[in-house]
Image 1: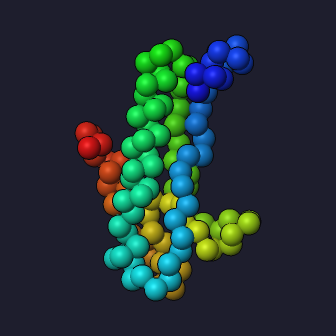
Image 2: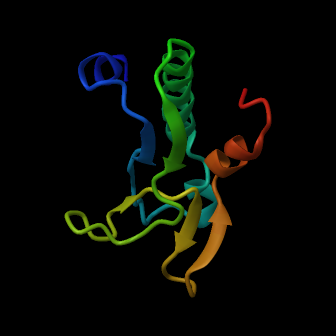
Length: 110
């Protein structure tokens, strides 16, 4: 972000798709797939660095998680999951909030 600020005339920045893919482990029941500690670690690290960049003057105006729901990816099909809710493809697309969704809801993000 600091590089972009310095070398690209200090643009307004919107982070429009930020997240990481989890493998779609079909052997896990939905309850097991809801435990996504690696995603929380990723978001915590990214948002901490983003916050530091903002403190140093980077003009960040928006941040959006990728993606709101688990979805079809052109390169991977349904083999990866990006969403904050787990989508149960085998049970009428029922949705369950992952731990990362609750983490985002927490005002302290601890």
